[in-house]
Each structure stands twice: as structure tokens, then as C-alpha cells.
Amino acid sequence: MIRLFIVWSVFSVKNSAGKIEVIQRTLSQCGIFLLRKIMRYVPLPVTLVVAKGLCASWLLGRAFRLRNAVANENYRCLTGQTSRLDVAWMAVRRRLLEEAATWGQNTVLLQQIRACAADLDAVVAPLHQQNAPYILAPLHTVSDVLAAMIGASVTPGKASVVVSSSAELYSAPVRALGGVALAYCSIHQENKTLASGLMELITDVAVGQQNMIIFPDISPDYTSQAEGARVAKLPCRLFGRSAKLHSGLVRLSGAIAAQVVFYHLSYNNGLRIHIHPPVSSQNVASVLPVIIESTLRKHPQEWLLWHSHSLYFINHSL
Image (cartoon, rainbow, N blue to C red; front, side, top):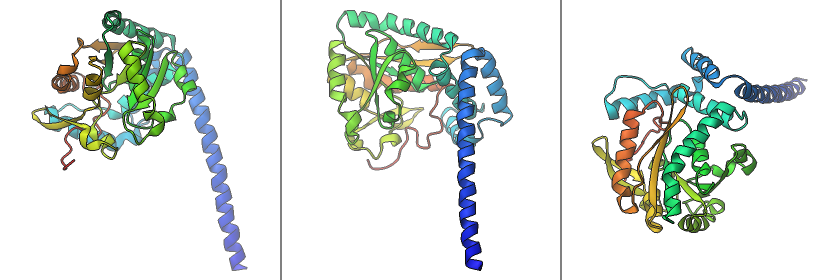
């Protein structure tokens, strides 16, 4: 009798847990549906003000508490500043902006994205007309999704993002919601699906058929276990100390003698783009750390990777 009761109790608990999981999944789906409707019909500034207030009261962003601690310690150690970053708000704002630009189809934000793309196109279109290959190098500020959408919107109107991993999770129909022709490939050969498109992309960039987008400020610890990690690091100096950057941008620009156009986004009552003059492939290695450090100093509240434990200061024998 006791054994029967125990078996009955176990299966009752499992059955109840399954029902709770279904309810949670349904509520989550309803919440996402409601969020996307809000992003479409409610003015974006109003939504962001409300969300920032909820973050300040810890009703949103609790999951980022530990990231916030790491980010602020990194920021203090590198810059010496006593002001604090709000990682929770940065993450929430990023999610809201990405939802607004894709599923929400927020007209105001889409207009701002087009305006940023027009500014960037004013720089890259002359290079395209001169048949000079170039690579777009946005930094991880505000939203990498929005940065990639802008890069895919400029001449010639098609782009691929070179990533380390995980891009295969974003299906083509989802990416198409941004209204741009955007694909992914990988520089790391263990990811066969993504890596197979890299050579085709390099050829297309060399002849001006599509743009290559690569984020140059990715920290090397993201790819420390990848094939070729020993040669994937670029020694440099950042914030007055020895550092190592991922060398993918330097290698790819050198392979096709491409100029590199660095840019980053900021958001203050609207989306804005900050574009650096094109850099020749021979100078990318020396200019890259300067651009990263200056961006982090001028726009610390916009940069999304402060929470990375190692940043660019990995201390091992690789």
C-alpha cells in the first residue's frame, strides 16, 4: 500500500509539473505577442521610458544582476571611472529595439535605421563605384542586430555577417523581417554549415556583389576553444596594458586588400550612427585597438560586452 502511494505521488507531481510548464509556456507566448503589439503601436520613447523605470525598480532585468557586477568592475578597473553602468537596462533596451525593428515593424525606428544606412552609404558607395573592396566593421553597441541591418541596407544591398557560432539559430524568415538581405557565415572551420559560405562571401566582396560584416570587438574568449584559436589573437595594447583582440578582421581584410569602415551606434532619443573614415588593410591592426578603446571611453553605456569576464586580457599560453 505504501509503495502504491509513493508511485501515485511521484506520477501526480510529474503530471502537475507538466501542466505548470504548459501554462508557463502559454503565458510566455502571450507575453511575447503582447510585447510585439506594444512595439508596433505604442510610441517607442514611451515604451523605453516605462521599461527604464521598471529596470530602475528591479521589476525588470533581475536576471542580469551578476552580469551587472562583472561589468561595473571591468569598467572601473579599465577606465578608473566611479560612475556605474546599468547592464540590465542596456540588455532590456536592446531587446526592445530589436523587437521593434523586426516583429514590431515600428515605423519610427525603421526610419531611423534607414537614416543611419544613408549616412553609411555616403561613405561606402564611393568605394563601391571605384571597385575598391571594403569590409563593414560595426562594434557591439546598442544592438548587433540593428548594426547588421544597417550594414545590409547600404550598397549593394546585400550582406553576410561573419560570426563565431550560434548564428544558425536565426532563421532566414526571422531575419527577413528586418527588410534586408542578410545572411551568416563563420570564420571557424569546425562549424561546417556556416564556414562553407566564407570563401563564396570573400569572392563576392572582392567583386562588390555583397558586403561583409564582421564585429571586430568580439573578445577572444568567445572563440578560445575553436579550431585555429592559436592564430586567432592579435597582440595589442588597450587601456595601457597588454591585450589580445580577435584577428579575424585583420586576416580577412588582408586577404582581399579591403578597406575597413568602422562604425558604432548610440541611442539618445533616437538611433544614431558614428562612422570612422575607411582604413586600409595595412593599417587595420594598428587602428583597431584605438577605435575600440575610444568607443568604450566615449560611449560606455552603449557597449554590450562589459560583462565578459576576460575581455581582451586573457592570460594563458595560447
